[in-house]
Length: 330
Image 1 (tube, rainbow, N blue to C red):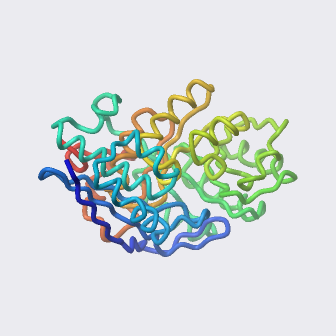
Image 2 (cartoon, rainbow, N blue to C red; image 1 turned 120 degrees about the vertical axis):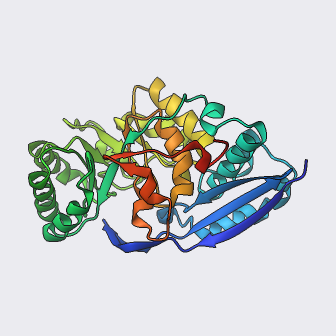
């Protein structure tokens, strides 16, 4: 049966600017794809991958270039060969998951074979700001059981950030995300400080393309790949340099490949994390399904969006729970 594809843009402006190493974000614009067939409509939201120039214009172009094959009734497996990993494929893949769920009257989690969803402890993310600002924002996350702190690559400033957060919240699981901010000569002093502060995870310490800096280096705390590993192919090529892989559906191109990455990471003996590129409840819903299989969950994107009316209902007691009927058959 023929389908009808529509696209729209969403501004996705944040409540306040958000700083990481090398960037200051005021919004994370997204594309929402809707595929209607036989009275059912599947939806998928994607923000793309900003550091690969995979933004709304590029996502929309890729989707429009393949409009005919999508409307002719492509399935999720064939989509893997039609669109590359990235935001465009994620938007269409997510829409196809919801469409199939509605057509079959089966929740997405059941189609994915992950079991009934349960609430997941999620990290809440703090930006790379001075300690005084961090402590103000930390007060907003009183319910948090896990915190992820962004670093900016300045060891002295990052040390102040980490120590301030740990002193204020000695009770939480604490991870840090360097967002490619460090070179090889800084890894040992960085990790020594993190160990001293009881940090449980170091995410993406070196730049994408500079993973050879990690060869022969042993960290006493797990090191996670984010920017370094976008897809299943990159996991197979580079996974041996990391302990954990952070799967983001905008990077790998959707839940379909995300499930494949989880399976391969487990075969390789790696830990698995699910994250997001910002995004609303709609983009978080498929990531939440994947999160049922993950060791670490970082799905706080909706709380940063003042226009996401569903966001307050997702979070309680440091956990996230996305009801099945929000995306797909309930």
